[in-house]
Amino acid sequence: MRSLTTLMTAALTTLLIAVPLAGAYAGHHHKGALDASDPTDMTGPRVTGLIEQIQGVDQGITDARQANAITSAEAHRLHLRAAHISQAAERVAGSDHGRIPAAQYHDLLRRLDTVDQALMSDTGSGFMIGDGSDGGNYPNG
Image 1 (cartoon, rainbow, N blue to C red):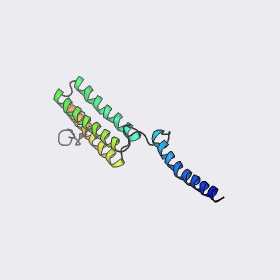
Image 2 (cartoon, rainbow, N blue to C red; image 1 turned 120 degrees about the vertical axis):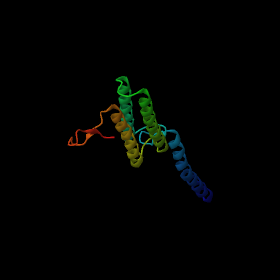
Image 3 (cartoon, rainbow, N blue to C red; image 1 turned 90 degrees about the horizontal axis):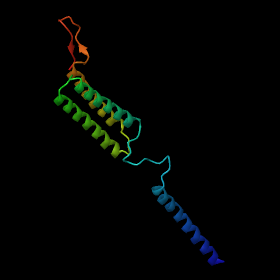
Image 4 (tube, helix red, strand yellow; image 1 turned 180 degrees about the horizontal axis):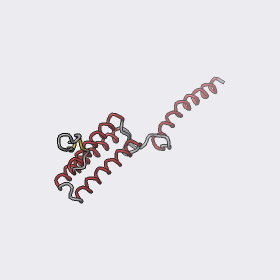
């Protein structure tokens, strides 16, 4: 009887040790729908929104160049700035499981807005400041 109790205790101990380890092993190889995404995936509304905004600014630069509103050198400079922002977004998202934390997101948006303002200023379509009392309105920037 004593050997049966020892055998049952050993079997139960083995089972209690093996089950969590098997679950951990399976968890790494079979991801479910609710598990974290692959770190290289760019996911989330911030990432999607930022990418779309970068693409919009980049298209605006291309359109301005095609309309001869800016020079090739200005277009190249603005494209490079937009590309640097895109690369920074990819680095941040890649290091944070495909997401961009709020602080970095707002910093990237601010940087992108600076590029957009430079484009508007270069094309002369920036918003005007001044009330005209001194002879006219002037582009901001």
